[in-house]
Image 1 (spheres, rainbow, N blue to C red):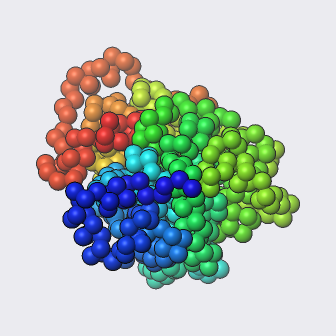
Image 2 (tube, rainbow, N blue to C red; image 1 turned 60 degrees about the vertical axis):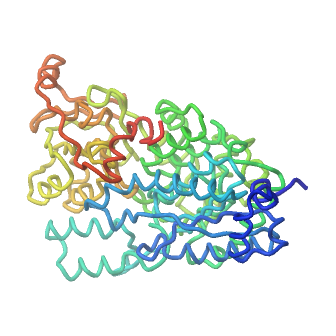
Amino acid sequence: MKELNKHSKRLTQDQSQPASQAMLYAAGLTDEDMNKAQVGIASTGYDGNPCNMHLNGLKDEVKIECNIAGLVGLGFNTIGVSDGISMGTSGMNYSLASRDIIADSIETVMNAQSYDALVAIVGCDKNMPGAIMAMLRLNRPSIMMYGGSTASGSYKGKKLNIVSAFEALGQKVAGEIDEAEYKEIIKRSIPGAGACGGMYTANTMASAIECMGFALPYNSSIPATNPNKLSESERTARAIKNLLELDLKPLDIIEKKSIENAITLVNALGGSTNAVLHFLAIAHAADIEFTLEDFQRVSDRTPLIGDLKPSGKYLMEDVHGIGGIPAIMKYLLENGYLHGDCMTVTGKTLAENLADVEAIEFEEQDIVYQKENALKKSGNLQILYGNLAQEGAVAKISGNEGLLFEGKAVVYDGEQAANTGISNGEVEKGDVVVIRYVGPKGGPGMPEMLKPTSLIMGAGLGKSVALITDGRFSGGTHGFVVGHITPEAQNGGTIGLVRTGDKIRISAEDNSINVLLSDEELAERKAQWVQPDLKHKKGILYKYAKSVASASKGCVTDA
């Protein structure tokens, strides 16, 4: 068996480091513990968010199981931001920034304490990519443990989830429901612990990371309150010990093919556009060349087979009932969509992990379809280019929205103005809502536009209005929407030159997005454009705006 504690043993046995030994003894370690590997157990747990409120309990369980396995488990915490709570407020500007803060803080503690291995216990959207980015920077044996998704709510016999609450606001504004019904929907949408239940960003990233090989089989699809979630703690402790014994590290596991596996699953299940940002950042952390063109290439060859919310009918709890994410991966592997030879945190390949998984019974359910009956022949993530997005933009096309949209621009400089305008009836059928100066620098923080899209949906305009932005979208967004437009308005992108009344054409047939103006007209407008000042002059959002890369580069802050 290989030496398990290369970092901690070096510290404790070095006589020039008596303070290190004294501190560890004071923390409760024994002489025997000094010869064991130290496992940092990072939790994004905190009380104010159902996605994260149970994670510290899982951290304690993993610590106990690590100690039973002959390791020393040492827990610590990092931050989290509730996208659901911050959505539609200035708090959303901090959401994407939290991803990099999580990565930075895990890297800081792990390196400063010289821990030998990492278990990251995560919940809400930015937790997962932040943890994986840290693992790749550290390159020590590591496993991600997702806390699971929440159960569905219920009102008048109808299943509810987080997006139900946002869309209820649009329904109330449109006069379809009264205040009392609106309140009941909000109260009943989320019954307890766990991340948002659809194939929104949290479940998208958890599923894709499991497919990439950085989480144990079934981790992403076991619900938060399922008893098997606690038993995962023992599996995780044994697995991290195995990784230490094998000296199998994140950079030994990740490769371009494993990222392709992750993106294949995202497209097959109709996952979140945020996956594009996050896997660009993950590839950057691993020094792997993975571009927007790679996303399009994978999407083109992947059928959409999952009928999951937000554009479909079902939730992650339903996926769990048909065999979980491994059952879906097995089907994709058997049909040539996944690379089975990719290594995983079990110490086995993806194909070896899936060998004994039971096949999906397609005749008995309509949650996942066979490729011959796919909901769409290609994936839902589409990369668009044109004079509005010379460096690219990201659309989520499930097939329900149509493939072509042309309409009059209704322009808003910021989300709040858009929310007010939509609520006041300024947007009509056939319009293209343009929300700009909400990109990585202009936002700053590239906030999600779930509230505007939910207002549009709730007002019954979802199939007749498009929305484009240099911001991004929640995994809960659906409809004809295009985000991540680059260059962003703050950097002089064409989206900053559009005026209300201009015609915009969006095509998922040739993956184009253009404002129908001549080059000469655009050049004249560009000559008159003046770059606005950054919205913040100090603090984290100032630092973020000064350091963040373009959305087409994953919004990384260490490029």
